[in-house]
Image (cartoon, rainbow, N blue to C red; front, side):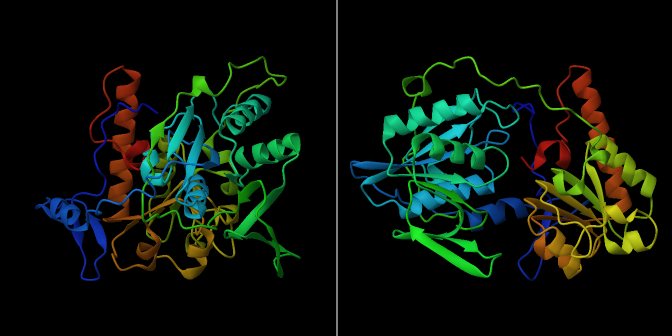
Length: 386
């Protein structure tokens, strides 16, 4: 993704409902609502967590995604910041390009390792880099998200190599102990705070009442030059998004009863490179096969972006998308249940929105192919959410 592409904020123009919910209404001309909303809801400056000289450190290691930490990585960083006292600094090791605001995330110092990417497999090199950072900062604890995209594996490898104590799938922690589910979730196992802590998703609220120092550390001063790897990375095999299992898809567009032109919807999915999902009503009507159904009686998905077209949001469907990172709803009814779950709601006709997105995405791709700048009217799927 080209970081130089100019983006237009997809959250304007919009209206604010009587319930205080922000809703996009296509076709309306903004009347200063965005400025008023930002001015009213602007966050006050947060204090620094500590200004004392650090005597010890806690380390947080996580892979980045598109230059930023995902929610799970931010939660691991927040956990370290919440447990750190006023003489403990929080150090972030970002595996991959990092353009986030480290201070607002709670880090006092951070190291960016752009040579590493979760799309490339280099476990021995990552392990050497992490071990070098531990040797440099001698942290009392190492925090990492326990995920399947590299961090969980790296944490286990490091603990085994260093002979460090470790706790995995941690769902609760404080200054004295960590806890994880046991016996198929029927019990909780406790132990003293270990050297390496691998956090389960949503174990910590990532919103902090303070900021860190956010100082950048030169990676060359800490991490040695890379050495030949014992592993050969054969790369990632690309495939049609329609062939990706919904449980593994990172970008999904889903159709409900409000989608009447299925071929146009499928054309949009092809243009955006998104997997296709559907509500139970759309499946029962025969518009989509049963394997596309998302919800309590269908598939549970964890996409980074989930766009729901014409889906009202029955409780069963909401259960199926509870772990999605960004949910965008397109619906004529601003009070539909899915609007309460959505991070962004577009109040508009579904078919008109599908056509507009298809046209805009096609134009953007054509402009990129021709070497000219991407249209300023960047689509939601082409990065407006980034």
